[in-house]
Image 1 (cartoon, helix red, strand yellow):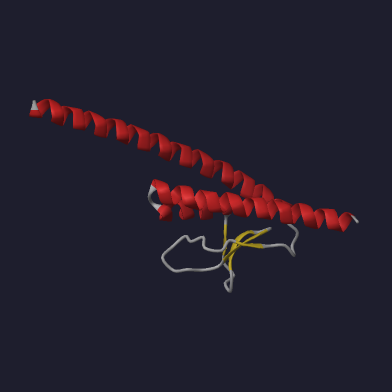
Image 2 (cartoon, helix red, strand yellow):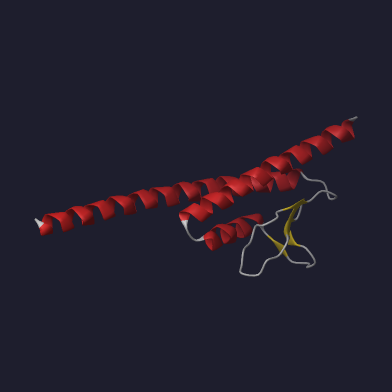
Length: 127
């Protein structure tokens, strides 16, 4: 009986592992879509526009990152990181599915705000 129970536990672990792999793939798919959308948003911004990605990190040191027409800039530095590299680093740092999902939600919220800013500014300039 104990062997059957262990076999059942092993099977259950295998099923959970498969579910986690599916979740990880969905996270990757969402990240790839966000890369495209952030790139398009960046291209739509004017030279004077930028958006602070508060609380988003790519490493252990906290820095302030801005989305600009050039990509991702670190406030106070001249370094510009390509958007796809930045988003890969952000998700990699999150390192567990729950944290990755929280970061993705924050990135989507920022993207909505960025798109509103771009639309608002472009509408205002037509007046």
